Image (tube, rainbow, N blue to C red; front, side, top):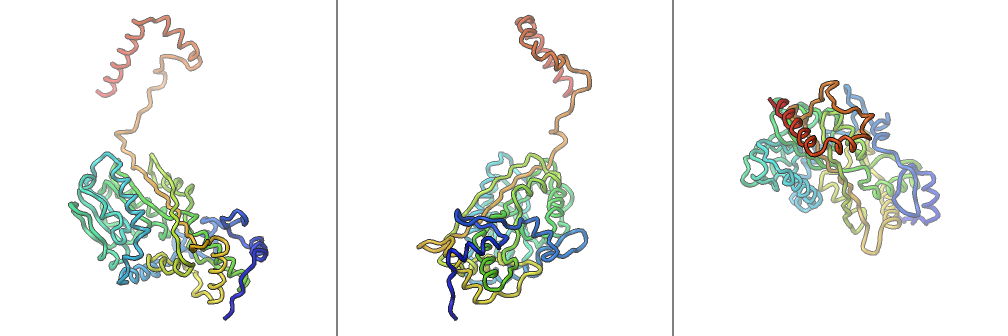
Length: 371
């Protein structure tokens, strides 16, 4: 089968017709966001109050297959790196936690880096029993393994945990707001939630190459890369779930591959291949070869092709009523806001004795409030 390489002029023509974003200084156009993909009736199914985008049964089978692969450790490089970075953020919190949950532990990418200096007991959970069985465990920390579906009620009482961790797992959850509320429920007061998820710019090179190839060879395209959350949406979801003192940041990891086919092979080994409900059952060989040529032409170099993974890290705290400030009684102010410009003159007129009296009054007021 012969492959007709697409010229730069043809690529530019396709760019004008293709609703997808390509990060190239020569080619720039619009791509549907995660929200538009989530709400499109062509790629979603309604179940109760949740909009289902992913086939959870297919994702379970993918994880089971990946866990039983004899060479599974070869594909752990990305999740191990992100898991190490996430565990390092736990050590940055100057506090000892009694009980924690590693939600979607995978092969123990975060759990194996947890120490007894930060946690006493850890529950390790995953949707896949085989993945959970092969997970590495922490040293000097009591642990318990259990199978938990992130879309169902967690087997914990209210306020039972001090810490919940999730590493590159929540992007496959259909009802993400419901999952976050469940995490909020099991966390105790002043509990903390730390997580990492793939961001919206993950694999944009692969996404755009497949779209262009399908448009050129088949006259249309379908989603072959699952939609990911945008960083602005993460903050809104955490706030709606009740978390406060949010810290959200993003990082990009670029991995090199000889060609697009090695990238797709590694994604399958990570159990990160497509699990959309209305995913296309297969791609034509001609389309795959064209996508590989487009990928190399647009993003590649003499060493191969890059694949970008955008990682979003988030930290949210469950508020403790004891630590929340209280409002002063109405009318208790000593100085009107309209007289603030006179404050320097008032302090100068009061002299040193007035300043000392002011500090004593403030100290006595604080003691009365504590009593």
